[in-house]
Image (cartoon, rainbow, N blue to C red; front, top):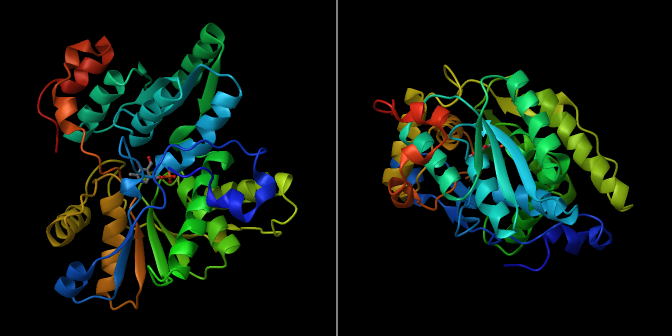
Length: 357
Ligand SMILES: Cc1ncc(COP(=O)(O)O)c(C=O)c1O
């Protein structure tokens, strides 16, 4: 585990002012997908293996949590309250990594289509000690949040996806990491970088990071959530908040300003809804698994990869880089050993009948 982020190496004045604690294994590897490219007859494709960002539980959340959980701990909080769908990877990542810092997770979760992956994550949330609270809508979530804050007091509230400006710093740092890998000759500078766009923290951080790292790669967010949650305006606003946060602590951060037209979002791969697989994403997940042995999830990464594949198949020039934001630590055996009856009553309904896929 590294002792400080690349961000503090490049901008030493941030150290001591911006909270940070090591949680992940960085840098994550970069890998060329040769077999995929030759099978498909497409350009050079690379993957940034953030799925391997932690041996405990990887994926894109670890980078954000290194900043946000450090903040919670520095403020002396005992609880971290966050939100997500009942199968949220962010909720599970927050639960697992909070525990390492002695913080207890409180999860306010919304119903979503029930899949085996969703059931697994719910069981794992409970196993790793999270308090689970169901909310049917945002009003109910707000009231339940208020209740938790009033009764427990020492609560750090992390919004959906952990996408605060502080959390997004994890992906500013990630771009500085990629720059180093390019400089070391491990990977060519990508023409485009594809990633799944949910609440936008990952994309906003990468956009700011690309500017600070002097990279010309175009960052392409593939929307996998409703356009109310993930869109060009939200990502630009968050990127501007990230810049303001950095500038508050460092005079050497340049004046950067993002408008929605600077944010490149692909909208056509979302399909009928959040967490609902599309034929394109099922095909993309199968192709990557068979060609390269890389497992993608059907809610986020397979939809994003389907967009990359479609562009590559239409004759796009490479190199393209896919930022793999999914966790690849397989906790399914552990989940299988958990009893759904140990969950709070209102969550047990999600285990009745067969999951949809
Ligand atoms: C696997 C995966 N990829 C991508 C995302 C989206 O990241 P962001 O919310 O920063 O846009 C998430 C969010 O939960 C995720 O779980």
